[in-house]
Amino acid sequence: MLNAYAIILAAGYGSRMKQCKPTLHLGDKTALQTLAETFIEAGVTPLVVTGYAREKVDQECQRLKLRTIHNANFDDGMFSSVQTGCNALPDDADVFFITPVDIPLIRTRTIAMLLDSATQTDVDVIHPILDDSSLLALPDFLYATEAKRGHPPCMRASMKQAILQYSGEGGLANALDQHAGSTQYIPVIDSGMLLDMDTPADYENLCAMQKLYTVPTMQECYAIWNAVSLPTHIRKHSIAVAGVARVMFEKLPNISPLFKQTVIAGAMLHDIAKGMPQHAAVGAKQVTEFGFPALAQCIADHSHLIPAKGAVTESEIIFLADKFVEGTNKCTLDRRYKEKMACYAESPEVVAAIQQKLQEAQAVLDKVNSAANVDFNTLLTANGTT
Image (tube, rainbow, N blue to C red):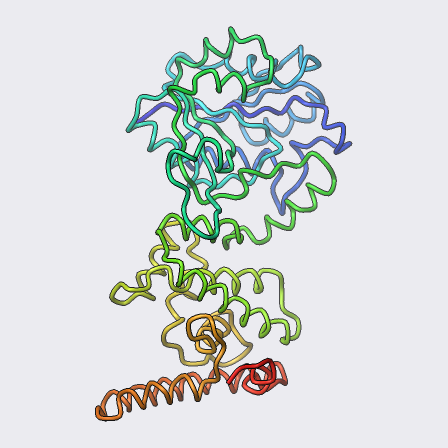
């Protein structure tokens, strides 16, 4: 196992934020705590570089039992803190990360994937990238130029001297670009690694995103599509299902942002294992492995579902929206299932199974219609559906 350290840069003025960014809260944790715990969960030891607002940041580090290194020259800019952190790296370091404290919503799985790659390659620098192309996955040779490069880079300990000797022009990014010949790019499912909080508006965005952290963003859904090489026709179907799902939940009262994002993500990802035996169960396992266990049940339920008592659930909306879409076209439940029964008219057992599925779908529809006070068959037909 590699000895890994993370240099967390927490020395800046935060002039546009006009607040001490390391101690700003995201939910019930500070930005520094959120980021430090991500590294710790991945087996990486954080080292926090302080500067401006030293006393306040030191107090937070003491509370979290984090080691600090003070950059007395923090006024010289961020690269001075990068070099201060590198100077403090322990001799037993095999690899190290560098990231600003104001990019706190990096996912633990991203760090774990970078570490795993570091054990399998001898390159000097590994960058995480987000391939959120909605049509096709990017080929490897375009990762460096077309994918979105995020934080944190993972570097061999030998890069310490190269960084310490660098002039600082263009910052860390330019310093690492000098080693392009020994650099690898790893696709990850992580839009948080792209988001900082330079301004109050950025901070508000991160606070909102933190509340939805358990389910993938749209960017992350696209990245998952690319990770599993999802065929184009299934991508188009999934987008159509998400559109119907949105119509449905917008008619429901008192729906939370988390409910909405869960439904959209579930609709986008419900068929990621289409074509495999028991594809709903396989898809549920896949989203769990991608780091989103909270979404797994919605994926598992989309093929077969008995409505639950109580409020309408995310699974019920995803299940029903899927039944209202054939290919990319909307259809009523009667049309969907009666056409299938006609195709298997000479097989009574198959017809009976399809009738059972129609009854299940109708039961879910009745529940959603009642909750929304809308007849979705009529609504969809009015919009040009047959």
